[in-house]
Length: 168
Image 1 (cartoon, rainbow, N blue to C red):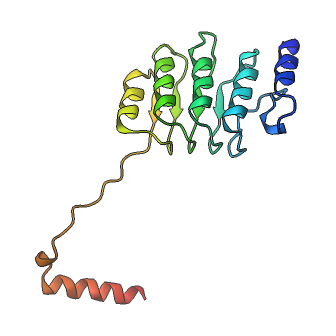
Image 2: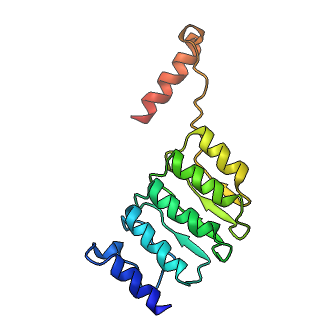
Image 3: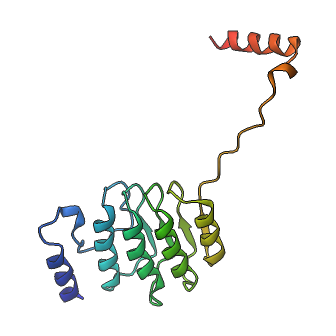
């Protein structure tokens, strides 16, 4: 196990500290700006035998390349990960497709948080249909139907103006 960590560390030598494989993998790594390379280092450490139940990688600028590394980890039958948060990253269509493929065979994961990523409706549908766990995604913004201006009567205008004047 230590030899594998040394190999991974040598692989990432010369990079910024946050991109090197940590000796001990913490569960909360949100907001560290790891990017794809840092995510790959985290996955390498996890694959080296670290037992993880939860992993939070939100707000790290992780894109499709990092999602591919995470999918490799999730596709591993020995994966013990139950919860994975990838909230507010840069995962797009390609990363979502690769994650969906891995999620189709993963029975250990209970929750995947992809809220705030750049996913199309097609990618969201693919993730939801493939996953055997709960997937949290951003909902589309629903705007109330616009009321045509000619349907607003005088009484309603008075109420609205009165309400607006009370706000100031």
